[in-house]
Length: 418
Image 1 (cartoon, helix red, strand yellow):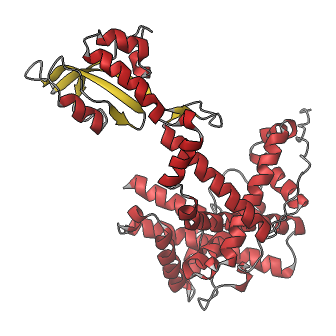
Image 2 (tube, rainbow, N blue to C red; image 1 turned 180 degrees about the horizontal axis):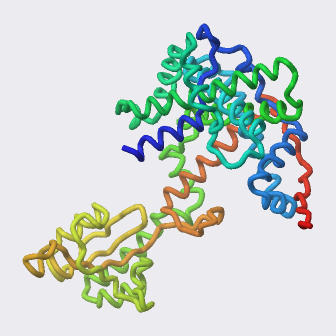
Image 3 (cartoon, rainbow, N blue to C red; image 1 turned 90 degrees about the horizontal axis):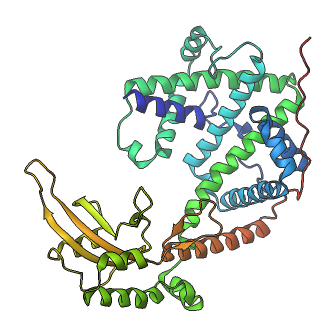
């Protein structure tokens, strides 16, 4: 339970709390109607400076890598396009979404105010300098309990389906109340000083920019979910891609696999065929020696269902009469030992040899260098192309304005101690 409580507490800290007036109405300063379609060069440079405070190495990386700069600009452009379209289609009018927009603003402003107010006072958790007496006073005022109930109801709606299925414990609710109160206390102080003009303009501009981009991320995530169906590749599109690119079509490997199967069925040494033709990485033992395609002591349920069903339908020493197709290619199977126990205390296992003629494709854009099943590779390629085209369309339609370049500030130099 402690782990679940910790996760929920972290979620509340990140997602923030509601911004409501004493009467329970949404605070007009939440700026829900603010446009998300532009960001200035000065604002981008402000973001970079903010990031460098916690990760100074980012300045060196950006200064030395023009492609990294270009990617950051493109990601900002896409983010603002999705957020702007979400706003255009009325997603900010949804009560739960509107509440979350206010939540984001409250969290960011309160956290920034906390950092500014208590800078140099030593390490402390967020809102850690707010006393228990201040929290008690907050709850002693009228109107806050209904605000918290509305806040919590809204937050639960945004949780995953799994989290929604269980009821929050009393401990979780108490932690949520504490976060809510502390955030509201500092938010009220921030807004009072903002109204009186005692906050530095640069501080306010920085906080407002963080609010804008966090709200944009929330809206972009919502709109991306709405677009998922529009960017899915159909079976017909995948088939057409293979027709246009026959060298990628898994079907071309079938003839190769069938020829090997025919040779195995004709009595050729299966282990030798496996060592010559199998493209299964598992055919290489820890010592680097080829293993003849053998998998020993395989418990039922470990292999893919179609593979296992074909293997266990055989008699010991028999080669499967047909190729077995999986996402990774064509399998030629020989059962060496039927499912059973070597000793009474053992788990039932079987021994099997197989030859894999792989249909996987190495994706040159995947930095991990791992291969993917052909259908997965093509599906991702088509869906990525659809997504890029759709976002490019949204960038144009929403007249997104993002600078093409920005200046990377020089890293701060540390003066030697005297």
